Image (cartoon, rainbow, N blue to C red; front, top):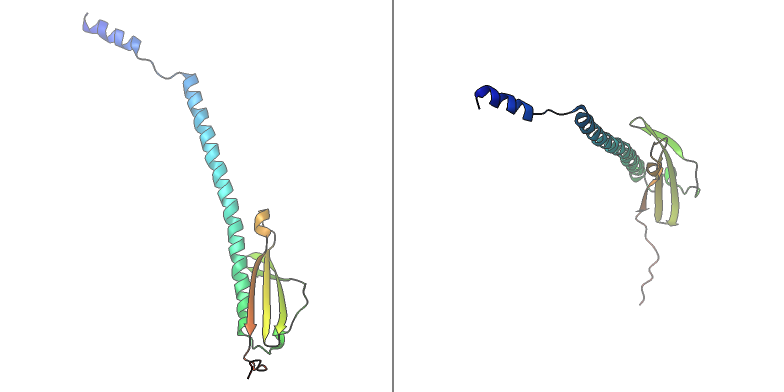
Length: 148
């Protein structure tokens, strides 16, 4: 065999990709790419809901700090109704409904409960409330109950 015969035989054995093989490969890659896009959309939605809940917790802590800075006998520390109307607060371009309940547990102990609910969130699970409850006391002398 001469060189020309060898090169023509070699050319007959080499084949490229067909149009069907290329289309099938693109289809498989497209399905994988759409799967990745769906995962990104799911992650973005849940991150937004988590951000709303974290910001709601920050709003609750800010509200609690205002009550911690008040004197125990301040009028803002008076007992409130068990189901007061919520106050709408805006923080980080989001709105939250803040409900505060103060209960006189004893004459020297008050229970402060703050409940914050994100408003207009896209995820239903992120609309659930964040709740902080603290007991606050004052120095008061009580009757001596020890015995002699």
